[in-house]
Length: 313
Image (cartoon, rainbow, N blue to C red; front, side, top):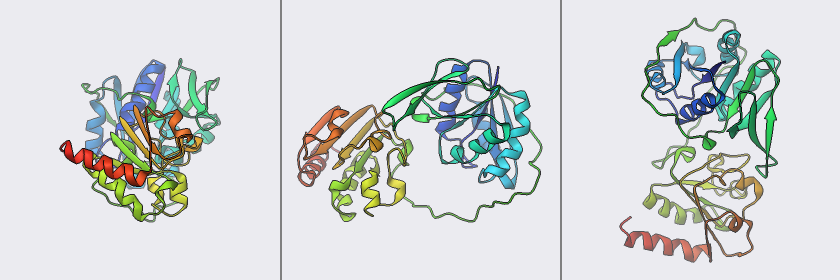
């Protein structure tokens, strides 16, 4: 069995999601190769070649791949699939964009957001906002799979796989990248942070998020939010944690003023330690929390900040 993993990167560095997707691929058995498609990706290829268990790295360096748009990725990947039994990519914004198109071109069903590998053709994935887990067996000759990175450990490094350069993609593309507006922050990126502190509707306003931001700065944490807080306009969309936001699994997740709707739990319940602060002792968030603090957040969070200061944070 041969498996192709599509690398997640920003054309400069390889994302940790790639290492975790390789872990899922190795669990399926067989040979694992990594495709690095982008522009100016020499350093990314070098990083990918170091991942343990990788047979080779396939590099495609072309300006049309700089943003990994679906049409350009299709032109690169579909011809390669004659030599592979499965295609895996991280279940990220980028992967969710091009993988369905490739599945459609190959006329197979995509298996999305897997959290476990039973065998080469059987996988575990969440359904009903993570309230149930489905075991899915695929009879397709080619498996098209997106991997939830938070569910797998990162593959170790220590390999020295060779890098093979392939031809540039051909064909004209109807879509093009126009631009983006990025929010800049000194805090760690939400999906990669070891500590996340999130606020919910109970924060009352966007200005009140300042009290959890102070705690986040002391802990070196990322700041997140529930969908209710985002929909209320308290914080931008890129703060959202949940089924329709970002999925996180940090070592510590602190939920402040979050009731715990199933859509939010789907995005953070795999966190190693969950701490909930809410004045409603019947809030659903306490059912998944390792530690619960029934208190008014406007009193509790400043107290937490003061205790952290005493501890030297």
